[in-house]
Every structure is written in C-alpha cells, then in structure tokens.
Amino acid sequence: MPTVLLSQPVGRGAPNLRADVLAVQHLLLARGFARVGDADGRCGPNTIAAIEDFQSGFMRSPDGRIDPGGRSWAHLSGTYSGQASVPPTPATGASSVTRTVPIPAASTVNPGLKPVRNGLMLSLLGDPRGGQYSSQCEPPTDPKLRRNIVLDTVGPFRVTGLLPAVLSLKAVMRDIQAEQPAVHQALGTAGMLCCRLVRGSSSSISNHAWGTAIDLTLNGVLDVYGDGRVQFGLTQIAPIFNRHGWYWGVSFGKEDGMHFEASESLVRAWAPTLR
Image (tube, rainbow, N blue to C red; front, side, top):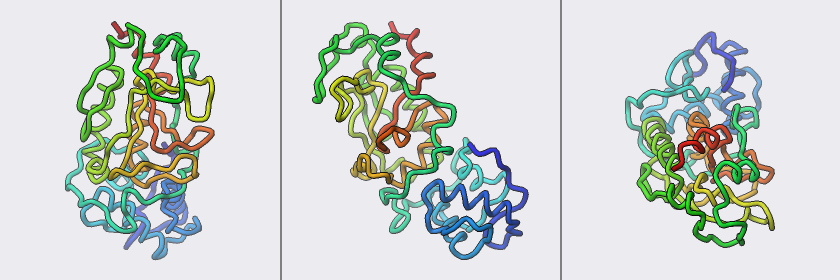
C-alpha cells in the first residue's frame, strides 16, 4: 500500500500538481495501465484516458478524476473497503478483465506477506499423502487433513479445500463482489485441493495439496503461466486478496498470476484451529 497521499485532485478539471500527477501515474502504471505512457508529472489526455480505463472496473460512468480521499483514490491505492454505490457494467474492449497487462511493480504486490515453505506446511498441517506425490492430482490420505476438508460455495463457484481457507475465501469473494463486481461476475476456478508436486519440480509439494491455494479463471480463461504478463481483472482483485492475507503468485520466481495461496501468517493462525 503506498504511503503517498494526494494533496489535490488529479485528472479532468483538476489542479494537477506535478507531485500528485506523478503519484497517480506511477500507481496506474503499477496496475498495468500502460496507456499513461511515461510518468512525467503532466496530466495529458493519455493519463486521463488511463484513469477512465481504471475507473471502468468499478464505476458506471468514469469521470477521469482522482480526488484525495475519494472512491477512485481508495481503489487505486488499495485502501477501499466499502460498498460499491453503483453497480458498474462489465468492462469491454480495451478494458476487458481478461486482457493481459504487465505484472504490477513488485513494491505494490503482497505487502508484508510471505509465502509458506514446504517445511513449515508439513510441520503445521501434516503431510497430505505421506510423502507419496507425483505431477498428477491425487486425494489426501492424512486422516487429520481429510477431517478438515470441506466442499462449499465461495461467491460464484464451489471449491474443495481446507475449512479455514474456504471460510476466508468467502470473505474475500464478498469484498470482490462489493468492490469489483465486473470481475466477480467473470470469476471461475481451475481448482483448489490437489495433492501434487509443484509444476516442474521433483520434490516440492504444491500448497494445493493442503487445500490452501486456489487457481482462478476469468470468463473461463486461465492466465498464461510464466509469460510475465497477467490478466487485468486479477490486478484488480489482488489487493483484496492481499488484504485478507492471501499471497499472489505473480511474485514467485516464475510468474503464476492465476494462483493465490494462504500466506505464512494465515497458515500459522489456522493450524491450531484444526480438529
């Protein structure tokens, strides 16, 4: 979450002070809105068009203006936590949720969150299959883990996963529906519980094996693994996942934009609750 604050509005009909414009431009670029061009501190037509593209994800009628403390600034800076006052229409064309954009700047992703390493997962949650894994999805065999696996509806789809992870996803999806309804409408899943090895590894267990990770689709389209780009809609909901303690896979050594998993802090909090 950025520490910078706007002193004056930016965009159409605004004072457009250089420092404020730079702050907005950098955040738009970090979220994949390359239409801004260079961050030069000047609010020209490209910057206003990029603001409108960004606003189209949560406003019916984008106004091309970012006000300090306003709804658009809260969305842009990742601090929005209220209800969407006007349901937006689904984005189309250049603003489609499935169009790909560059990976957001590392400083804007997964703030304060850590992925969970295999050793800690094994010590806290047990071994899902007693060390027997392949590249194919298989069911867990560990009795304790099996007792804590549930099938339930989370927002627009059903998942099978670890109970506290599923409950957390319900809260995430409620916020996505309120804050990014166009993305929520497009959401689907490519799976949650899947006892297998990490893609391309002969030893590392995927966090899917514990039911604490989920792969998402948008309009049925799966983000391409490791291409250095990510679906626009995922950039819109990643701050919401982060706010709930979920780690986004774009920060892995090989970008995995469709993947969200419970962070270390969440797993540590969940482990004592398992029966």
